[in-house]
Amino acid sequence: GYRPAARRGAVLFFVLADMAAINSMYQYSLSAYLNVFNHSLRKSLPDGLLQKRLRNIVDTLTQNVYNYACTGLFERHKLLFSFQMTIKIQEADGSLNNEELD
Image 1 (cartoon, rainbow, N blue to C red):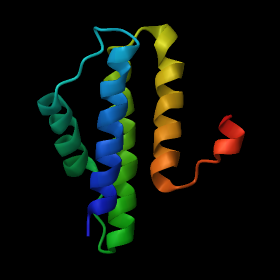
Image 2: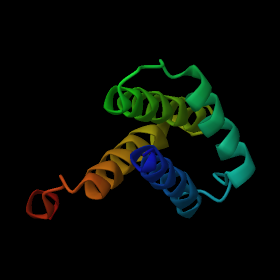
Image 3: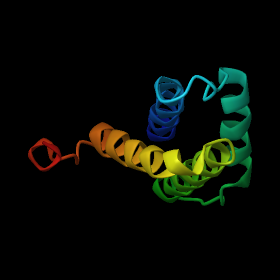
Image 4: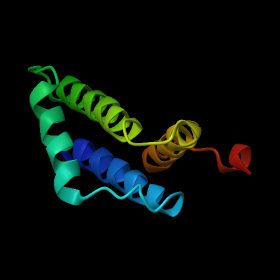
């Protein structure tokens, strides 16, 4: 089913939520995030094959969340946000090498 898209959506939401620890003005509501999520579902390219459809959704969602967040981030925090997104996505996919991170 569509669980991989839901999993990526959850990971990205919590990356956004964690940004409040960096600066208290970085607080994103779930309803605002769901608007970005639903927009991504509508704008991602359709495909007859489920795996390709999922890849399109995940890619569109990731790009849209990044763009959404960066509109409200200070320039000095954008690289930190990108790094946090990358680490959490790799962690969720099981492709994060903790030895390299330490």
